[in-house]
Amino acid sequence: MFLFGTGQIFAAEGNVPEERPVTSNAIISQYLRVTQSRSDPATQQPVEIDISASVPRLKKEGRLRVLRQISKVGQVTYHVLGFQGDNTVKNQVIARYLQAEQQGQEKENLAVTPENYKFKFRGERGVLGKEIYVFQLSPHHKKIGLFKGELWLDAQNYFPVYEKGRLVKNPSIFFKKVDFERAFVVQNGVPVPAHLTSTIETRLVGKVELDVNYLPNSSSDESEEEVETSCARLASSD
Image 1 (cartoon, one colour):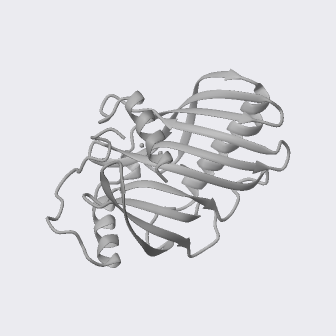
Image 2 (tube, rainbow, N blue to C red; image 1 turned 135 degrees about the vertical axis):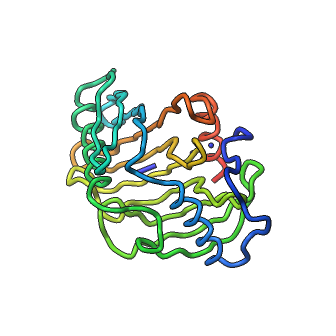
């Protein structure tokens, strides 16, 4: 469930082939090579997450800051650092969102790979001075955590830049429909989520709007302010 314009946010990392691939299969092969060789869930560092949620119909909102940790066996835990706002939003919206995210991450591999998705190349576009490859994604199976939508890749380093879509299976009976946009930043040579916005249609309180920031740590390539600015500019370019 997960937007960016400074000059460094999508900077190339590592060894990049001098010539770009000319087929969609070659692009996907490069994407898999650079992401799978650099990602290891067992070694993920704790991440501080700031979650803002609002329920327009009830005119209520809340903001929760948590520390997410992933164990070597993939277990996800959240430690609350602080909360401001309405407790209904905290308990009925944010807590349900975190529970759904936790269950989805622990359940199975939900990576954006050919094992889980069909990739259809939609062409190139220029975004924030970068050339971007755009792929349409269709999941092979209807299971929690997978979505139908788009994946954008940086044409220079093949890292994911942006995802958007709708979950094909609701992670909670509380949710009726979940749409999201998620953007990435390069941190220690690895693409990681930086920002997510989501609009959720619920069964009890109507529409819910979520804004999730994955806060940069001391080893990040970008400051929190730079990430937020870049996310906004990327979202507006869609």
